[in-house]
Image (tube, rainbow, N blue to C red):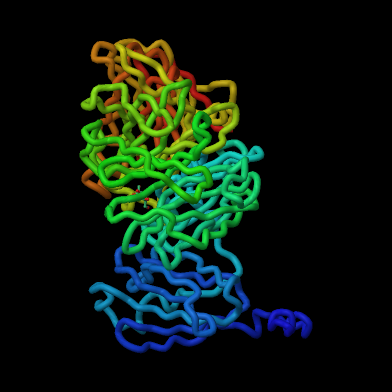
Length: 565
Ligand code: FRU
């Protein structure tokens, strides 16, 4: 049968004349229920969002079947921004069944809600948006909400980053794996939604492996991903891709791993060479479960780790287990309970024999990967080249992530970092350095202009050295090195906008484990990341200056500034 589109094209008629207005009528069925028929040849229905109202539940119905459902804060009083519902996959005629929830809706008659006027069809959705706090050289979603990085891997020269994504608003909801790719870890291309919610649950965090030996039977080099299906229970499900991570097929026997624990999530998988097995580490309540498999489908519980070790001041989440030069590092993100409140990443150094992780430090020892307040859910890329251990953080904190002053998108990733190890007074710690790719993004010749997108190299740091970034509005960030206490601190109390949360103002303090010789300070529109050039310290903090800091005042050190190319 010839499609309506083709028919119109052959008739040489202008679609815009025939199909305006594209949105057919609404049927108001009660004070909380609307059915809306959408007949259009256009690609998107733009949904107006108001962030302070309650969620509406939207079911997309095609031929009497639900083909998609999600929650969206449809605007009642005014529109903050719009999000696109892609109609392409459903054809030119769908029915939306919309239920409004909560008390806020009672402020006006349903037929007068702001959303009806601005719910428009369109062939385009503007993603060129340059809000003043959108990062220039950190990954951000083009629109919508992002939290944890998920399922990251490297293959054929391409870095794949999946992430916890809400395409229908800039706050946490409708968890889906978004997907972006990059060849240089700096410039990212949004590839759309890779794994969408289903009848088992929304799609929480997880990991991917490149199955080079075809152990799972999906083909040599297939990408096999595990994620948490978050329904009434948290269970672990699998999906695989035979086109290098661009599209996924969900495994028909999902969920693969179940438990009656309420917090049971974030599977992270890697190949263990010595035992020739896949290992999965999984957050299970207040500890990590370690499982093994030969085929990525059948898993044997090997051991647990964590009871009595490190910080238990919050929920254990997003684990990783990495072999760095013969020692094993177990990463355990924890929320709340971070050193400055809220979310943070702790880690343990020890040994792993394919069955059991043994921590080499006293149980009471707590080590943090990053001493800022905006570094969370950090895990590594699978299959990274040259034996590198490249990790990527989510650059926010659950205390205020949903409130930070951005609109059409929320959250960025921290800079990619390469991990190593160093020892200090008998303990092993992680070294964290900006990945080499980061430096390629900056001019090789320094100048002395502080801008919204640059990095500062501060050398020959002396005791009491201070580095202050400020603007004409009197907003500033002050960094201080105390060689006697062996600490580096960053004060963002007067950094700009801070009143969106009582938890934002803070001074973060890092141990420097001996002398801090040089510090590298990366500035983007809404973030400052300080690294010991030798890797012994990392500190990642968000800032929201009303205008960019343009004045650098440094004492007790020598500074150079490198501009983003
Ligand atoms: C960590 C986390 C994960 C979970 C995901 C849900 O930030 O809570 O444990 O899988 O976010 O979005």
